[in-house]
Length: 211
Image (cartoon, rainbow, N blue to C red; front, side, top):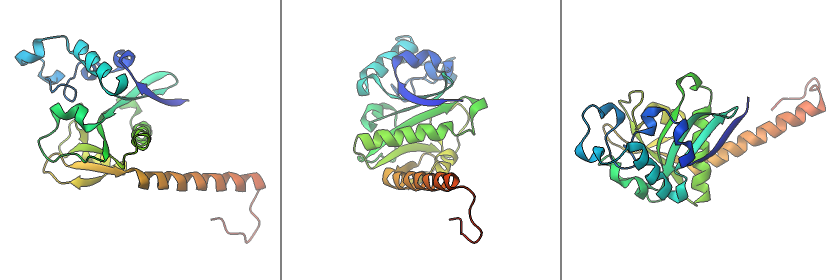
């Protein structure tokens, strides 16, 4: 089984679930698919897929996130970028930090959850923050998250290493320091190299401690 994380582009719209493909919650502040039975007048101005494609093409060089594939099949994605790009649909308080990349939302196929694919998307966000010379990745959390909602669940963000940075009763700002994450990843890589070296030397001699 091969896992790959690649840039998310307008060509990937077709691989998103229909709910996400038509949702303009973060991009333009439009009605979510759950509200489609009673859309606002401004939501009727154009096909939401056309609107989403236009927004994606205009933001961050047409790469508004990352998509994770397993054996070539798209299994999940995340939307990320500068906070300003998503300014139309921020929860009213608190504000995001100027030194952070914004992780707007993420989604993984239900049958593939719990297999580490969400963590791959978080790692992709960390790499993008490093590329932009930013200190952290931030996201709004939802303390009352329901499956399919556009704001990420606080429980999942905490599990992936985020901490509460700015409190709010419903939507706190969650923050992941990229320097801490890099140090953690480097320690894991060092441990892996040591393990491979020990395996290459053969069985451990009696009395030799295994660190």
